Length: 126
Image (cartoon, rainbow, N blue to C red; front, side):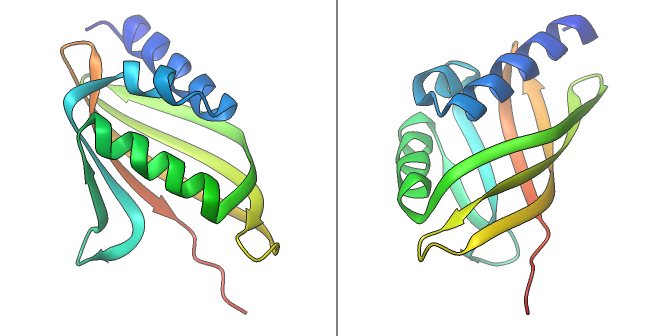
């Protein structure tokens, strides 16, 4: 896949995330897509979400636990079938507290779609 095609895929995926368009997000991933989330019980990975149906469920769950999400300062670096994306995300936690985090995602592209997303967020504690 060319860098231009990968950039187009990542742009569509990012825009779908910003809009909260679950089906547009799902259209960008492989059937066996795997998302290793930054927080979760499965050491050392956090939480592992596998497949399109599990992705839909995880996104619906996130909409309950976090509100008013806004992604900004996004960048991608493409290296063949490997992509690194950085971002800033703001929003509110389930109890209404404001949040502001920086993070990065590691992606693997296969057959023109995203096969793997490994997420890392700064964990802010006070």
